[in-house]
Image 1 (tube, protein in one colour):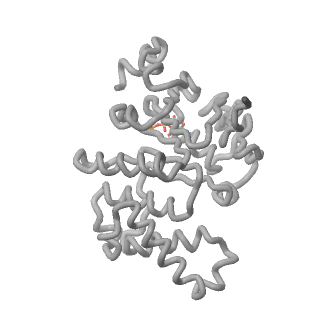
Image 2 (tube, protein in one colour):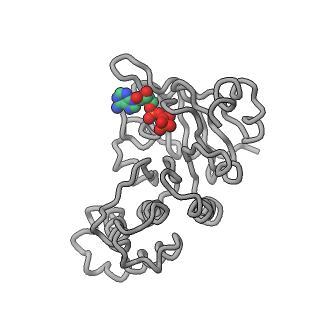
Amino acid sequence: MSTPAPVLRLDGLGWSVRGVPIVQDVSLDVAEGEFVAFIGPNGAGKTSLFNLVSGIYPATHGTLHLDGADITALPVPARARRGLGRTFQTSSLWPGLTVAEHVRLAAQAAAGPAASYRIWRRAGHYRQQVEQTLERTGLADRADHLAGSLSHGGKRKLELAVLLVGEPRLILLDEPMAGVSAEEVPALVELIRSVHQEQGRTVLMVEHHMDVLLGLADRLAVMHHGTLLALDTPDAVMADATVQGAYLGEAL
Ligand SMILES: Nc1ncnc2c1ncn2[C@@H]1O[C@H](COP(=O)(O)OP(=O)(O)OP(=O)(O)O)[C@@H](O)[C@H]1O
């Protein structure tokens, strides 16, 4: 039986700034519906790798394929249209807009410029999309709240809602627990679990907290000095002597 083609393939991917390598020779296949978590010390290159995958940084070495198509030279919007979405380490919301307004704007943006001149015709469709997304992300009771008034956990949920309303197949989450209080972490973990398992999306996630990842990730990718040091199941990575020597012992 042949193995299915990967959703995402990174082949020798690298990014150098003025000759200094920040990400080096990263090769990795991600299967449809898989959850791969990226760990590694501060400055290991995790966010830079996500910037390469989402198209914010242009790769200086190697290639990226999405569903078998070479996307190495494609800009961010073209990658988003092909189903690739991401969140950022720092919050990217407008404090003066409501929760529902954020999701509505994201729904309109995801529909593309061609849909913009018939917004009134699609109003019912957008309303339904917003309601469903707020329901799915546990924000329905805060639809009219200003984003600026939400807790850190609420803001993270809203960032996910903004991402999910565009129905991306492959999502990159960069430290979605950053700044979230301990009480809010379980609900956020549960939301990410449902995005992966119930909605069947492929997820790549950077996260420092191993306790969060152990129940979520199919594989752990360990980054160190811009390279992929290890890539395996969480149990195998935790037992890997190289990983322990380079990272786990000191940082986790
Ligand atoms: N635009 C840039 N120009 C120059 N150097 C950069 C740029 N972006 C990142 N770097 C450097 O690349 C290295 C990797 O940074 P990156 O943010 O990717 O690491 P990280 O693993 O995500 O770290 P953290 O866990 O702290 O978020 C760091 O030394 C950083 O200073």
